[in-house]
Amino acid sequence: MAEFRMPSLGADMDEGTLVSWLVGVGDHVERGQVVAEVDTEKSVIEVETFDTGTVTELLVQEGERVPVGTPLAVIAEVAEAAGPVPRRTATRTRPAAKASTKPAPKAGTKPAAKPRTKPAATPAAPAMAAARGTARVAASPLARRHAAALGVDLSTVAGTGPGGAVTTSDVEAAAHATALATSPSAAPARTAEPEHTAAVVDEPAPVAPVVPRSGAERQASMRHAVAEAMARSKREIPHYYLAADVDMARATHWLEAHNASVPVTERVLVAALQLKATASALRAVPELNGHWVDGAHRPAEHVHLGVAIALRGGGLVAPAIHDADQLTVPEVMAALHDLVARVRAGKVRSSEYADPTATVTNLGDQGVDVAYPVINPPQLAMVGFGRVRDRPWAVDGMLTVRPVLTATLAADHRATDGRRGATFLAALDDLLQRPDDL
Image (tube, rainbow, N blue to C red):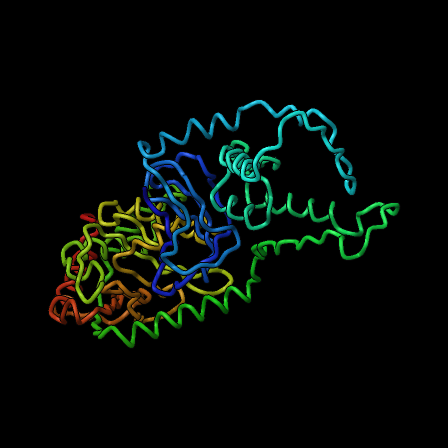
């Protein structure tokens, strides 16, 4: 039995709103399957499960905002879920009760009393029978608790969930219908009953729907969340900064030759070369690839490179390209293009936000010469790139003009030191001088 929890999708996330469930009770899910959509301060994110099994409980309703780590659902392994599944299936396919063939009474009228043909049961018998009937109805534990609180008999509710399961919305609709049928305004004029005997039913307060925030609201919220995370980063992480100028002549020539030999749709930007070189340098200097958690350095097994991406409406996110060091430069370009498109369409998965082991920010296309990044905790390092610009450069004792790039490194002094940071920048420089080997 495993709990599916509200994931942490970055250091700037403390809580999230469950926008929608994409699965229901009784559904089988596979590891990596998208099961819900969550609204963070930055965007709506598709959240995956890390377990394989059957959904047995949905613990949080759509529209609820809960802290990171809150259990959202319970997923049972196949062996654990094998028992209840046949009963649930049998409940869904059982024939309708005979009473359902009779026309339903109109609102405001009382059903005719049935003649007693059997001895009266003990006072506890009806409650026990009702409980047994309710237990056989396909419904989530949340819907059952809701029904108990509102006094709704689940056996009388038509389910609209997966496989006919009763949802909380079905329960609320049934309670609302009951309230209308028993309210004084619905009573026929001919029944002038004393005022004190009129049935009054408190209608439940429905869960507020998730109202999409405006662009300005989301942007303000995002900037606040990012500012909080960066303030914490600068307050808690002892940053050290290093910078190195890189001769990009060979890389530029390689790009020109490569792009001339492929279709326009397969051309590569200098950003792809930078990302590939950074991922390979992190593999060579693993002390910078990982996280600082619970007062200790935890090296990462894979290089999941976070990429800072600006949103059209304002703000910034940094999802990961997984195993970037194992990809070719064209594959990194394809992954970058796909990631940017999905970020701006709101289709990024939770694992891509939660997995970065280091992050790259590139402001060269904005005319920036040097970028001084702030580490995104719990990561250990962030690499910044400025623009490639023509500068005077000495080659073999001769002054010439070369395309030059300034690369910067912000690193955590608790896990590494300036010497290892310098080793990383030297490896990055060397890799960008050998683009054919990337």
